[in-house]
Image 1 (cartoon, one colour):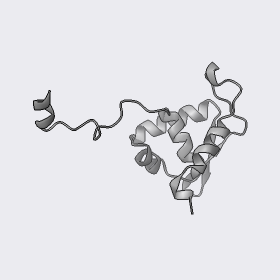
Image 2: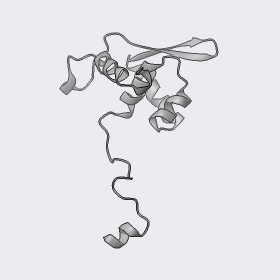
Image 3: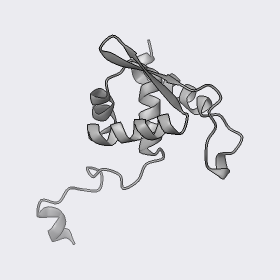
Image 4: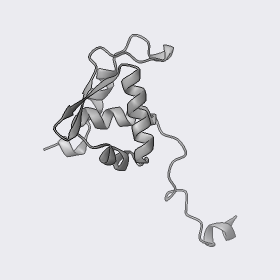
Length: 112
């Protein structure tokens, strides 16, 4: 095992985690909630996803009523639906807005 680690493999501290607490859908929704006029290309970069994946996620979120999209000149503008609830029974009765507010507050770029 020591030989494999020395042979160029990254140490465990350098590897990307195998799992995360938030789904890609949640991560995309958080980024959009921070900047409703954000370009999907920028969402993709921030979430480390492809632009096509982000487009699909936004389509899912729109189809399920979590956000709406409107045109603002040449750009899209997104609005998070008020009162949107989590879908899984384990989070039943909780609004998505609470999670978004918590994560927006924790955004280092919003700190002064």
